[in-house]
Image (cartoon, rainbow over all chains, first blue to last red; front, side, top):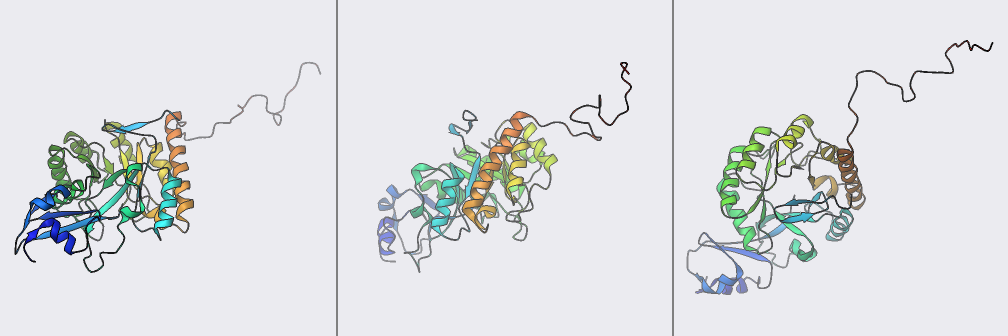
Length: 54
Length: 266
């Protein structure tokens, strides 16, 4: 993944504006934090969303 | 019944029906079912976004978040640490700080792991979550969860998705009797009479998904469940008669027509 921040990554994946939650490098981030967190090579980024469940 | 509200934390509710959002045949049917159920709390699960199909609809595109209290679950977690991680992810959505702790020890039974559930509850309560643990119908672990700060206790009636109903009504009664937080019977209910029984036993509410979503007519079943919950609650408040071993006639045994009598006038 090219350098940038988490917001850039989300945009590249076509997820901007979607109700997703991101965990980057083991830290859970609220959306306001995305532009402030650098995406570095090797970083594990988890992207989740709400699905149907009981 | 209009004033018969209850609360979890500061959240006051009149509906006693928590509805799950899985397994419905379509978003349209789901929305209709939600509407007729009168549910104020909806449950969800947290899963990875499928990056090969990002256009896939998120469940939230079909539900108005402002209209409901969301209760995300930690399904898929096998340990307290996994559940805590899922809970933090759910809260970061900004949609809810409620979490249903659900930690399954076995994929075959999906029965909750009580030790890990207690551990996760302790951690999440400290982090300020409103914690509703899904747990076995064991009065001792339920009390421990309450002591750990659970906002409500959610014992299962039977294993998730089985529709077997309340397998141990005695335990549910004991749990209700001992708890000072709301008891919500979660999982395993199959039909309207199961839901009614839960409320008759004194549960504050029920959480159901499969019996509504997988019914032939989910919208009809959502209404049936709502009515059963209301009937069960009213039964509990009104006080059922005690069970007796032998018959007792409704009109008494005096002056029965079929009994010989000899009036004095003759």
